[in-house]
Image (cartoon, rainbow, N blue to C red; front, top):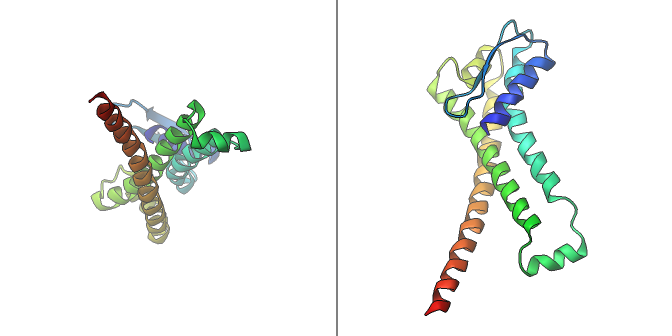
Length: 168
C-alpha cells in the first residue's frame, strides 16, 4: 500500500510539472516525497490515494483474467495455483483500498502538517471530497477485506481440522 501510494504522489508530481526535491521509499520508515515548486499540489496529493487504490485493484482484475467453462468447473474441484494468485491479489487490493481511506481519515484527525490530509486541505481540496473518498474506500475496503480474511482463514482452519481428525 505504501509503495503504490507514494509512487502515486511521484507520478502526480511528474504529471503536474513539479520538481522532486527529496524522496524516501524505505519500508522501515514512513515514506515521503517532497516536490518544490509544485504548480499543481492538488494533483500531486490526490494521485497518491487514487493510484494507491487503482494500481492494486487493476492488478487484481488483470490477475483474475477471463474465466472459461473449464476453469469454472475446476473451481468446484481442487483450487489451482491461478485461483490462489487471484485470492492473494484481491486480498492485497482490498487491503490497499481499506488502508488508503483509513490513512486519510487518521491523518485528518492527527492534524500533522506533513501528512496528506492536512496538506490537501491547505492546498484547497474540499473536505467533502476527502470525506467522500474516506467513506467509500473504508466501507467498501472493510467489507471486502474482512470477507477475504474470513474465506482465507476459515479454509485454512477447516483443512487443518479435517487433517487432524483423520489422524485419530
